[in-house]
View 1 (cartoon, each protein chain N blue to C red):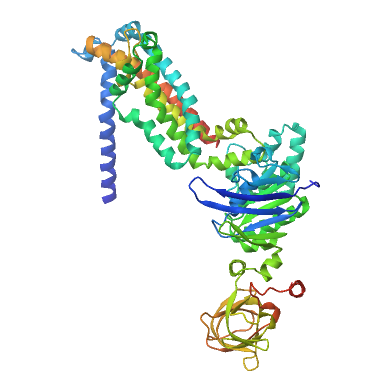
View 2 (cartoon, chains in turn brown, purple; view 1 turned 30 degrees about the vertical axis):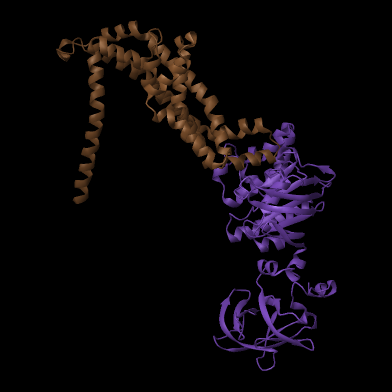
Length: 262
Length: 357
C-alpha cells in the first residue's frame, strides 16, 4: 500500500514537471497558429503568421543552418585533433588547457563578443561577414566537442591502441584515420549534437556580433518579439522547432546507430 | 622466420621528464631466436626496457639499440618490424577478430588472397578459427589475448615483444596460455622479449631470465642458474621462496646454526646462508642434524609447506611430502645437502650446479 502511494506521488510529480515544461511550448505554438491571440482560439486557426515569418525571416533560418554546419565542420577539424593532443600530453597540462577552453562558456557571451569586436572589429569586411559570427560560435562550442571526444579517448585506452597499431607497422596517418577516429565516433557524435544545438540556439554572442544583414534565427526571434505582433513571434518559434527537432533527432539516431554497431 | 636476429642494447638508460630514472644505463644482448624474460617487481624498469627495444621509448643520449647489425635507435616502432602483445590486449574495438589479425598485413599492402591465407594460418595456430567473425567485445579474456597474439605473429615480425600478456587472466587460463605461448615461441623461433612479474612464467618461458631491480639488471642467466645460484638475496627471494639461515660459527666445515649444524665447507666464514624450502629434507628428529618443532602446516595438494621453529628469528619454510601429517608442536628433524646451501659471495662452481640441476 505504502509503495503504491509513493509510486503515484512520483508519477504525479513527473507529470507536473513535464507539464511545466511542455505547456509553454504548446501555448507558444498555438499562439503562432491563432488568428488573434487576444481573442483566443475562437478567432480561428491560420497559417498566415507562419507565412509572414517565412517571408520576413527565411534568411535568418538559412544563415542559422549555415552557421551551425560551418561551426560543426570547424569544431570537428579543430576539436578532434585538439582532444587527441590533450590525450597525449601530460595530465597536468591537459587539465589546464581544458579549463582554458571552457572559459568562453563561463564568461558571459556578451563579454566574449565585445572582446572580438575590440580585437577584430576594425577589419570591416571580416566584421560585416557571417564569418565573424562563426568565430564566436566556434569559440563557444569548441569545448563541447573536445570534452566528449577526449573522455572517449581516455576511456578506450587510445594510447595503447595506437601503440598496437604502430607495432603492426601503421604510420601516424594510418593510425589516426584507421584507429583513433573510428574508435571515438561515439564521442564525436555526442560532441556534434551539442555543437549544432548550441550554435543554432546561440544568442548572446550572436546578438552583439550580428549586422542587419546577418541575423541568425534567435536574433530574428528577439527582433520579432520586440517589434512585431505576438503571433508572429510565436509562429517563428514554431518554425524554429520544426527545424531543430528533426535535426537533433537525426543526429541522435546516427549516434545510436554507431553505438549499436560497437 | 628462420632468419631471426639478435638484439643488442648498449648503455640504454631512460630518465623521464619528471627526473625519475626508470632505467639506469644497461647493456643487454638477446641472442637470435632466444626468448629473454625480463622479471622483476613493478617499477624495476622491465617494461621501460621492453619499450626501448620496441621503439616506444627513446633511450637517453648515449644509448643505442641494434637489431642484428642495424642501429635502430632512431627508428619509431612502426619501422622496427616488431610484434607486440600488451597486458590489456589492445584489440581494435572497431574491427572483428579477422580484421584485427589482418590489420598489420593490410598495412603492408599484401594481396587479399595472401592476407586471407596468413590470417587463416595464424588463427589455426592459436586455435581461433571458430571466432573469425566475432566482435572483440564478444570474446573472453583468454580469447582476446589469443587474437592479440595472432595479430602480432601474423606480420612475421623480426622480434616479438610481450608486456605482461597474462597478468589480466585468471590462474588456470594463465597456466594454459603460458604453455601455448611457450610452444608457439619454440615453433616460430622468433627472437622474443617477455616482461612479467610472475616467476613461474619467467621460468617456464625464458631461455634466459634477467631479474631486474630498481632500474638495473640484478642477474641474468638461464632459469636454472637464476634459481639455484642467485647472485643476491634479492634475486633469491624474488624467484621462489628462500630461507635465510643465520650461522653462529664455522668449524671443520660444519656450520653452527639454530637447532643444530650443517656440513658445508664452501661457506666457511659466512655469517648466513640461504636454502630453498624444497631442498630441506625431513628426517627422524633423533638422528637429523637439525631439530625443530612444527609451528604450522599448509596443505598445497601436491606437497605441503611446513613452518618449523628451530629457535631462530624466523621459522624455516620446509617443503614436505603431502601424505605425511604433522601435528602442531611435533618434533621434526631436518637436513640440507651441502650443495643446496648458497650465499651470493660463495657461489657454487659450475660442476656443482650441474649436479643439482
